[in-house]
Image (cartoon, rainbow, N blue to C red; front, side):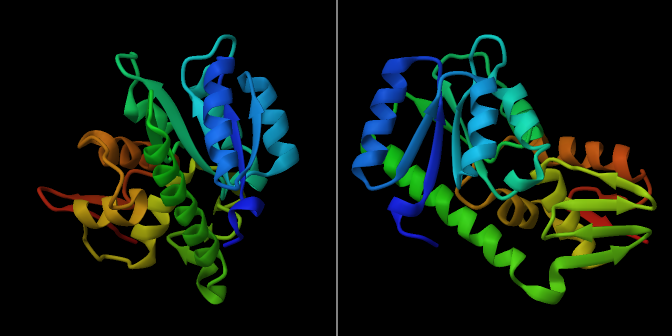
Length: 233
């Protein structure tokens, strides 16, 4: 993983004081920080900069953070980019909506500088983990049940159809398909897909499984009641 000065962070918030505060503290740690004030500008800058991490405010005019994240996740070149939502305490914000859109984590504001830096370091370690997974060579492609799962390109081929899945859906599918008929417990799934340091609601896995079944078929992922899920062929 590159040193902080080579790690690119895109900060997106419509409030200039928030941008200034967070940008100042991250820049002081040596990170290469760019900013955007709205969702449309964020998408343009993300395509241009290809940042390692995007910190994205949820509540913004015109295009909110959830929609912006959904649009970013349609861009193949940004599949490895970590996206963390910024949320204010008391905001009407659904974690599940954020994760469904392809978000990786959320940061509650206001946040103390030391805590912010710690969270950013942890998130960038996850980026490193994604890159290492991509470089595993022969394990990059899984062919099973009429699906071709390309872990490098984050693309699933279902016959002639190309499916572009939000990253968490993709990672969940790749995990289950990596060992046919193995029952993955909910704890194993949380740890592998979301990470041990990420706290998500109990329904998060269920929502992602439901969405995967809608796209690849209802019969390929079996629920083991009270335990977890397995991929069957």
